[in-house]
Amino acid sequence: GAVVSQHPSRVICKSGTSVKIECRSLDFQATTMFWYRQFPKQSLMLMATSNEGSKATYEQGVEKDKFLINHASLTLSTLTVTSAHPEDSSFYICSAKTRDREGGYTFGSGTRLTVV
Amino acid sequence: AQSVTQLGSHVSVSEGALVLLRCNYSSSVPPYLFWYVQYPNQGLQLLLKYTSAATLVKGINGFEAEFKKSETSFHLTKPSAHMSDAAEYFCAVSEGFGNEKLTFGTGTRLTIIP
Image 1 (tube, rainbow over the protein chains, first blue to last red):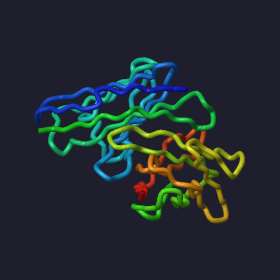
Image 2: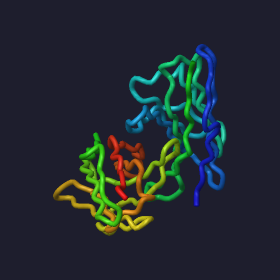
Image 3: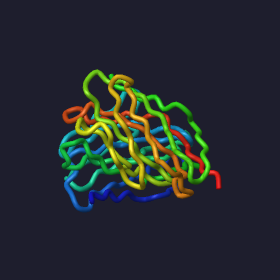
């Protein structure tokens, strides 16, 4: 089945630095990638939707200059957390829409970001 | 607008007992409905989905869910709980092809009592 590889699985960074998270679709072309954020013991909140070759669409309240999304190819989307702060510490998950016309999605395994 | 309500943030059942996780949805159009399972520090795995075909949907690991339009519900069940079922379960809704954003419920943590 469709697989999305997400890296890194865990990252610790210092305040003020930037962190890049990658999601690759391994055996299919992901024209649309969704990026979620999940706080401990809470649900997933959609941050943005990216389409290959175009600018991402951000949800209300998400700072697009802080969370940079690039979807330059059909198999790779990246999320860069710029000038990270401790409040950015969270679990970030990507999800790609598969070619299944019945609304199938495949999720990455998530990235635990800790900003110290 | 679409939304999902999961009643019960924590559910505990004995091993071998029936599992019932509740999900009610709100959608302005016929919805697509999903149940996902999440193990600690991992992504989400699809258990099953409803996309306007049969109202009783069978998924992986013995789970199934029934779409009831009159009740706007999509409850998840499993006849006999196994220890490996302990995890976080999320119900999600989308408005289908053309509006594919998933809206998630707040999740239900399932604990299995030996």
